[in-house]
Every structure is written in structure tokens, then in C-alpha cells.
Length: 572
Image (cartoon, rainbow, N blue to C red; front, side):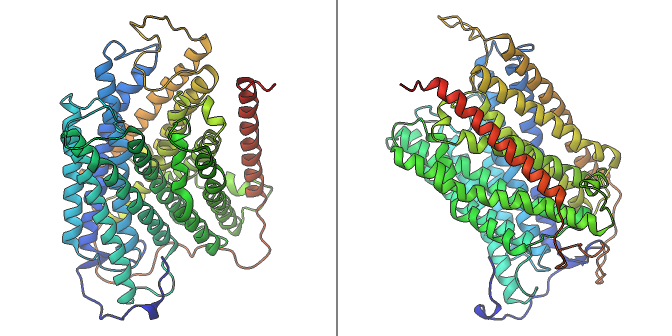
């Protein structure tokens, strides 16, 4: 997304209503400000709905509670609504707000065609409300992915189509804003890394959302009885949307990590070109990983499965490895530049742990990397997948990525967007400092409990009762399975409490937070100059130690799974 100024015709800058941010000195387009606020606030609403559904789901899967275990239809209804609102609506509304911030605000530019952006918002809201309405009416207890031949009413598929079209239009507004900003010379040189990262997310989003259209348009006509539907084709195209959505999250989350590292400690990448290259690897190969959802399906050739889940996917993993090194290294360099040079980890001990943006970044990276990232690559291995498929460790993995990774990072960013964009001081700052720890620890326990229950004891996913009430053949699990689910249940309660705290702080800030006056005169940025790499020999022993620990953990988990696999596959 780096555009040469000579490649575009120069345009006379168009004046637009704006204000100057008192903290960053950036020029904020008021039209963009309203759209960012609307999309982010709407995202929080759907997070609240999805969190309420999470309460019903988690308290049902916890055998000690078994809230809806005797009402499977209500369990699947809550599970459907939970998946839709958390994986699709909350995440993508917030990401659209991020796209407008990364284009208009970060580039000191005007948002191109605000009317189109509002149309995109209207389509997304209409789709989300329609989807929730159909599920709430009890007509679509098919879970968010609605595998064929499970059939929902036409309105269910139409809701996804409307939402996808709105999100595609929002991506178009983002790209147009970046191009026009260059043509109007709103910035010099390459786009900032935050804009580059969000452009990566937007490119992946276009492919992903088109996959959603390709999936749900035929399913819409199938639900009307106008055409047949092939379950294997549906699954193949669905996971271009389902897993692709997580790849949008991945690119956006990593971008937020870079941004929060800069905001909280003044960290800049030690090699920005390498970071941009890592984002490029995401664009080229990240969606190939979606095939790991189909490894036990008979319709795909073995060669296709092996290629996508090994050689091709590893280039995307390389991109994540680069970011996993670059961001901690940037933080360590910035902290050592401030004088925290004693020992291997003084820079980390003296970090601003009381800043919710910093704690959210570190916890998000730890949960995503050590729990979600390692299990994602291992479970996506073509041979190992067979011992994890359809067990509870699969949702344990993606709760570590989507919830512990992306959602926690977005929560941390919110505490800085509220004063910068909504112009309100965060209400309850002391609680805001606590919230990432409460939420992060809860999600970590939830994920680890589910992963252990699935990997060690084979506890299945997507069932309302562990005892299979009413089954002709009695089912019994060892006591360790129940202990693991107890850990997951306790983690769910902590995460739900942290989520309620986040929503409460956001709503209280928007409705009653102290107003920050606006300014129309340019000001210098209040933050200290970023502490980047100056060309001196790079000294990052702490980062090297952390990366080494990660690689050793990765190897140990992989080796452990191969040992388990060797007991499943008897070698003669």
C-alpha cells in the first residue's frame, strides 16, 4: 500500500471541517470523527450482546452449573447468537472504525465520500439487526456457520449478505481516502505503518467478504428452494469467510500492538521495512490456513491439504514470527533508551504496567502467541489435526486468538480513542487500569481449560450436555475432564466480569465523561519523540530470551502432540 507520488495526478486539497487533536497534533476530519464514534459505539453494543450469550453458553458447558443443559434448543440459539455477534459484528464494526482512523486521521486527510461511509454503516447495522432478530425468533438455531444441510430462513442468509456488502463498501471508502490523501499531498513519503497494517487488514477483508457473498448468496437461493446446495462446496467457501475473518483480526490486532507500543512507551520498529514485509506475507498467504478446518473432509485431495497447511501456511507463520520479535524488541529499545538498562529485564519490570494500553498489549501478545498461536499452527498440521478435530480444544484455541488476542487489544486501544476521537476523559480510570488484567487472566483460564479438556480427555465441542442426556449409550468422562471444565468456567466468569467492566467504562465515558475542548489551531504533539533504533549496536537480550522461551514452548507442544499421535497411529 505504498504509493509513489509521481504515479498519481496531483489534486488541489479540498477544505473540510476539522479540528486539531490536542494530544497528537493531528487534523481530525469531523465527518470521520462521527463515523469512527458511531462504528466503535455500535461495536461495543454487539460486544455486550455477544457477551450475554457467552454467559449462557459457558454456564451450560460448565457441568457444575449446566444452565441450559436440559434445553438444547436454547443452548444452540445462544451459541449461534454468540458466534455472530462476537466473531462478526463486534470485531468488524470496530475494525471499520479503525480503518477510518488509519486513513483520514492518521494521514491528516478528509474522509472521502462520508455519505458512502454512512450507507456502509446502515447496511451493516441492518444486517446485524436482521441476523439477531432471526436467531432470537428461534428460526435459526444453526450456529453462525450454518453448515448445509442445516437450513435457516432466507432472512438469515440475507443478513450476512447485507452486512458483507456494507463492510465491503467501508473498505472501499478506506482505500479511496488513502489514494486521495496521497493525491492531495496530505502526507509525505510512505504511509505510516499503522495505515499500512490496516491496509493489509482491508485487503484481506475484501477477499474474505467476497468469500462470504459467494457462500451466502447461493445458500439464500437454496433456502428459497430455487437451487441445490452442495455441503462440501459450502464448507470450502464458508471457511474463506470464517477463517478469513480471523486473518482480518490478526492484521488489525498486530497493527494495534504497534500503535499501543508507540503510544505507551514511544516504541518504533527497529526495522520498519521488515515489519512491512511481514504484513505483505499476510496478504499473500494467510488465507491458505483456512483449509485446516477441512482436514478431515473427504472432498479435498491429500496433496491440497498438505500444501495449504504446511508449506504455504508457514510463510504466513513467518510473518507472525517477525512481528513477535519486532514489537518486544521495539519496546525494549525504547525502555533502554530511557535508562532502564540493568540486567536482562529491568526494561520490562519498569514498564508502565498501570497503563491499560500497555498491559492490554502485553497480555494480548502472550495469550495470542503462547496459547492461540502455538495451538493454531500445531492443530493445523495435517496429521495432528485428526486428534483434535471437533474436540473442545478447537474453541479453546480460537478464544485465545479472537478473544484473548484481538478483543483484548481492541479494548486497550479504546482507552486512547475515547479522549482522542470522542473527546471525553475516560470515566473510572482506576477501573480501566484493572480491566485488562481481569479480562486477560479470565480468557487465559477459559482457553487453557477448554484446550486441556479437549486434548487430554476428548471432550467434544458444540454439545449442550457432557453427559449426553437421553443418549441410548451412556457416556462417561474421567474426573480430570470436569476439573478442566471447572477451570474454564471460572475463567469465563472472570472474562465476563472484565467484559462488563469494559462496556461500563466505555458507555459511562461516552455519556458522562468530562468533555475535552476542541481546537482548530495546529499544536505540536505532546508526546515525547519516539525512541527508535539509532544505528548503534542493537542490544535486546530480554527480547531474545522471551523469543527463545516461545520457540522452546512451541517445539515442546509440537513434540508432545506427535507423541500422542504415535499412540493413535500404530506403526507396524
